[in-house]
Length: 306
Image 1 (cartoon, rainbow, N blue to C red):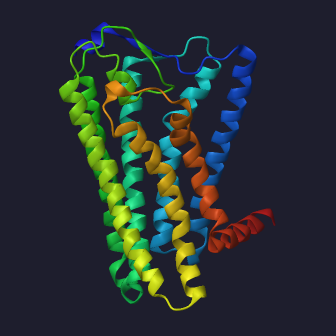
Image 2 (tube, rainbow, N blue to C red):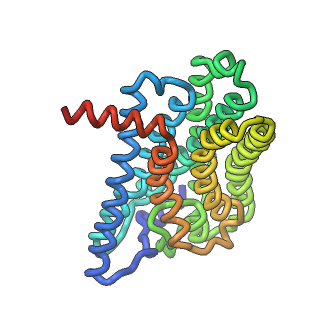
Image 3 (cartoon, rainbow, N blue to C red):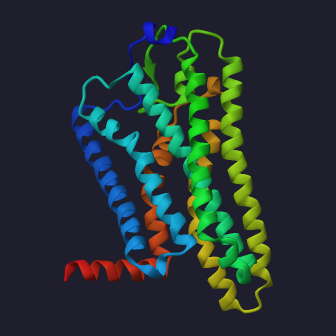
């Protein structure tokens, strides 16, 4: 395609610090990334090691932790390398690859959140039928659908982006390759492709968000029907962690992707939040608000230190 021959590399220009501050920021983000990796790996190991956590709720939580690892690892290692580089470049093929996997794992995360919301809906609204409805087979099918939809979504987004012509400039106003800043660099009319990309992103993000919202409307109604305060508190506490991380994830996504790319303005705080901070907060939120996870982690940690 024309874009491959006109531009061979892109330059990231969003972070520009003097050398001393740049090294400090590098160590801050390195620490965040280490916490992100260790937190999500600890959740996966804990769920695998404790048979009491072998149920749909923690099955999906383990998959979320794995997706968070992959999702953040698409962008953060390259960003860390760029902090130590004078010229922050990425090849055209590397940029397209990064864009592809970023949207693949972001879409997968959207749908795993939706699956987790449905699991909580069945647990609270249909407790007597929970084990029958949320069978192992259904859980596996939901995870398989998550990966399949992520694959389709990412292929569509990537092919539409590759259909553009890039003839200069080549400076991306971001720290990773994403569709909105890339479209702004295209030297052809992008109105139609931009509309298709926004529609595709809207179907995924808005569709998942509405599904989660519908689930929680049903959950809220069921909670208010519980007669005891203790019962309502217990039911709410099982959903609070999930609802918190869903809000943290979908808020920035709607802000970034539910608008035409030509109106895109780089917001370093929002971009860093949904690519780096949110995946780190997920394990923190789930462990701090979940007694079963804290107990299982203490048990696992105690076993490993003996």
